[in-house]
Picture 1: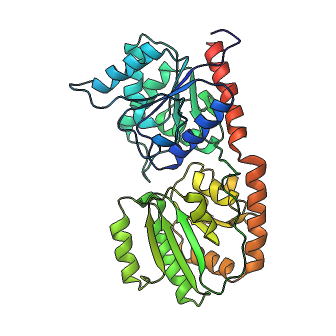
Picture 2 (picture 1 turned 180 degrees about the vertical axis):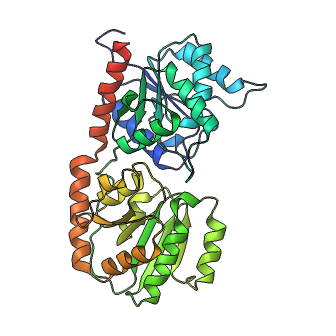
Picture 3 (picture 1 turned 60 degrees about the vertical axis):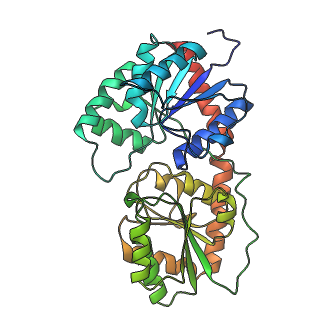
Amino acid sequence: MPESRQPRILHVVTRLGFGGLEVEILNLVHALERLGFEQGLCCLQDLGELADQLPKTVPVWLSAGGSGPGSVPRRTARIIREWRPDIIHVRNGWGWPDAALAWLLALRRGRLVFSFHGWDSMNRLPWRRAFIYRQLARLTPALVSISAETADRFAYEAGIAPSRFTVLDSGIDVDRFLPAERRERSGRLVIGCVSRLDPIKAHDVLIDAFARAVDGGARDLELRLVGDGPTRGSLERLVAERGLGDRVRFLGMCRDIPDQLRAMDLFVLPSHREGRPISIMEAMASGLPVIATRVGSVPGLVENGRTGLLVEPGDVAALARAITDLADDPEVRSRLAEASRRFAVAGLSVGRMAEQYAAFYKKTARAF
């Protein structure tokens, strides 16, 4: 590749739907375009809800829709042959096999890069998937992870040397997530959570903790759950059982996340497992104090007692105490909120992320 030209990047995803990984990709594509990178996006499954938010200059392909076995890798291989990217960056583990086969069918055109962002399970990586990942990792000169913790865990469970991973930080548009003008309201204090409704996100723990805080006499509280997913029905039943129907709102999928965050006073993410959550980063940029669990790379974002509070996953009593403590102390909430915003502006910007990826792509395209 000529030194004077930026590498041409093909991002490969299963779909560009609502989710932290997908938001990160969207942010990165916009930021790299400003740096002069030519990029394309290939969706293996379907386009997803966020595809229409990509820059108009970025071509989007859909590999699904063909007939016969192997249609997805065959269609993806044709995209690689015709568009001729320098880097094929596969952005989630489920896409590795199809993308790897496509790259082989395209006669190894370009450099294949695999990213791993985590998995949506509280269990260990199944041995068959671990074996497949281990074999596919041999095809690429570069493995990427969003955090050292995620890389180490995946390396251990898949049997891949940790030294093979490059950690590249996630980033957000901190100017899009601005703090609201906060005042002590006469109405309810709003606690919010933005995440997929999935067992690993532990919304049941949050609802139980919220119920304890309300029963314990914490000031008038409201809980808003932004997102949707397979556990919505069971969570709605749990809310009814706890008698919280007038206090808990299920808002579903929302595109106006900055506005939703500005309507909150406190952000909670009680997950059993996480990587480096985009939702926490957006909450911090919005000037919200955060309560979260000590999992994954969350402690690297939320400093206990400075930008928020950390509790152990699954500990309903500790989460209820944290909610009560912050709900009853506006001065502490304000101090944590200001520190959250400062941390986000200093270290979580999309520009910083784009610079890391730009350097990585150039090195990968030219060094191998």
